[in-house]
Amino acid sequence: MAVAVAESVIVEELKRLLPPEQVLWRDYDLMLYEYDGSIDKHRPSAVVFALSTEQVSQVVKACNNHQVPYTARGAGTGLSGGAIPINGGVLISLARMTRILDIDPENMCAIVEPGVVNLRLGQATAQFGLTYVPDPSSQKACTIGGNVGENSGGPHTLRYGVTTNHTLGLEVVLPDGEIVTLGGSAPDTPGYDLVGLLVGSEGTLGIVTKVWVRLVPIGETVKTILAVFGSMEDASSAVAGMIARRIIPAAIEMMDNLTIRAIESRSKAGYPVDAEGVVLIEVDGLREQVEAEAEAVDEVCRENGALKVRLAKDEAERAALWAGRKGAFAAIGRLTPDYYTVDGVVPRTKLPATLARIQEISRESGFRIANVFHAGDGSKTRPIRAACATRAKCFQRRAAASSCSLGAGAPRAGSRSWPNWHPRFRSTAWHPPSTCTPPRPTSLQKRCTQLTRLARRLRPWAAARTWRWGCRPSASISRSTPAHSSGSWSMSLLISR
Image 1: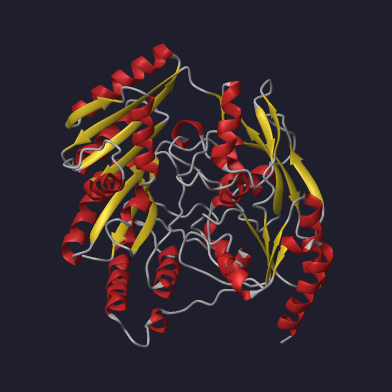
Image 2 (image 1 turned 180 degrees about the vertical axis):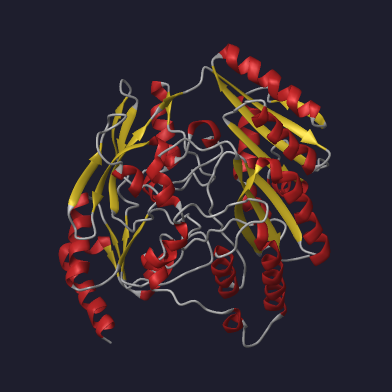
């Protein structure tokens, strides 16, 4: 009752602090802000659209005064639950802070507000021959602030690194409402790397209101190569072979036949629908270097059984291939309206064994499994999509405690204590599987039950991280370039047979 009273009071306080158009409190309006891109949801008591750092600070102080929780939100495209107001309270949307404040070509950096869309920043800097590298699949919609909160990656992080490697400074509103600036436009600053600590903390350490980002020169030449394979084992061997030969392309992506057919059913991207697997490789840099790397990639692919190696003949073909890859998860919806998505990290040398086991489980269970390999991003995110949200959450929590028999996604040192520290975990009850049984099992719910059992069988080599307890903040402290010993992998478990 006391919480309800406090939340009612905070709504009136927010309406006093901000103009009416910047505050939502009616249930009908709040429904749009109770979820992110995944399956979990929780409705806030109010939503505020901050337009400045000062307004964010005022809202945070008001929430503290009334002991009401608050949560920061960007575009809401994430899958890790970072934007979900799990404790209710106030949702602080930064989506209207959309200004690119400065682009400094000489120092190769830019200053942006957190609501700037990722793709828009790249378009704005292209005229200076510069680009912002992290490019998540949702880059048409996701924001820089959300990228900072999640330490987002993307296909081109294999060579260039994830968001933490491209964040120079932050302006942050701390939990007590104080405004501080960490880092700046300089490539390195003395003292502790507090910027690295905040990148990936999902808003638990402060709300980012301004970001200094690193820009890199656009490569003189870029070549996109599509290698077609008769089996996914050969395709994964080719990826491992490139890294073994010290060939580090800008991006390496892999897809199996089910994913390819889904993409081509949605838009004609140019992938061969009869291929069991494809590898999409991109090399960029100086012309001579690109020519040499492209030849080396071609050689490695053919040595590992490639049926065909094709070079994109122009920018239009290159753009179509990448549009197909980045739209892969949306394309799965063409095959079935309900599916789980599981992300994990698998050492490249273990990819063939992992794929073989996935196929065995698919045959035994009758579930179709579509695989997409994001070889460059070391992210350990595991989004799981299904119609039965409660069972999905239980699987996420149970999977977090599992280790990986193939050396995939083992928790980082010290991460075992993370669940006890994380504020979201402390407020979340652990529900045993028995509490997830639906009272009236429909055929779809029965299918979700089967899916959960299947997911448990996948646990031994799936990544040991859930959307509630990430290792990203601790991983960000080192700010090192991603190691080339493991790659991110995603699979979609299709509910319909």
